[in-house]
Length: 493
Image: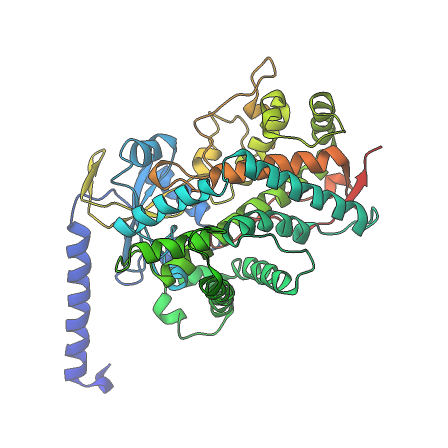
């Protein structure tokens, strides 16, 4: 390296020493859980598989136990692996573990605003307002149940009339129906299935899903500064979400012009009223409104529609399970009325299948990251304030003691020996603790009513041999998505 010159070499050595010293200094702060040795700046990137982090975490847990430390680049992350340690943190010490950890991709897209990615007093005020307002507009009440039943009727008629028993991918139809529920709450009305703006919006969401599986998107969370300068699908994903945000901003502006403060039509109107009532409150701004609405729209559309797509994929592989559900629906509900939430307690097998679908698909295996809001002791370790936490859901939903043969789809995981429904504390697909999904009640209602309405009216017929149906998911940057498939909806006689 003589060609660099002695001064240059000395500068490089000094910089390296400072980086290593800073790294060791931050690593000694608190008695962190053990973990693999990390390379300064790079962290453990070469010891982790960005496309299958869960497998990497499983191997690390076998070596270091249920709580260990990794480094994503220079950022320390404490990983919680298993039910007992996650319960101890998120439930028993819920307030301390209520901070939201921001991965670089989330930070880039959501900017720490809204419900999902905000922290501190902003998060508390926005979440409290959102939950109260959503309840005011029917979430969790009879009104929203009737709205879902109405949309389920539209979906059934669309399935009956559109493809005439020919196989097709039902993903778009399911997304339209589910999205219309959250749209009716947030925007004040549902969209017609042929509305061009609505179709464009749903297409953007579908494209986002495709981008999430790309390696460049995974790498963004390791090397955001570098990836910001490189082209690729990560840039397209960020731009696409910005386009959805622009769509919502346009609706917000229209609401600001037409609002009647004495008669709010929807969530956006209620938020605008709150802004006027609390002028100067930095938590309630136009930007906060658009980001909160974006949170509600993305979560209220994507997670439930993806679960329903998984459900139909799985049931087309197991016709005996589908048939047993239909017999139970026929016995309790019949064919002359729509299923309702009061039926669920009388449909234990159907309820067990729905729970098993959510357990089996393990939709968000990593969970959304948390941070600790203060220096805190967890078991034998001291975790410094603001340390990022990965409270993994996959090891809980796949726990072999609670769910024998967890890799197998088996509704018996949620049934007692006498056929009654079996509850499990390990069932936490919506996470748990202070940051549990705000829309859990709505999502569970939608999954039950949409799925039972479809199976009440149709038998699923795959165009390929059932033994060739692959129900394993595609792993993306934040969750799992089903493989593309086609199915015929054959009207039941």
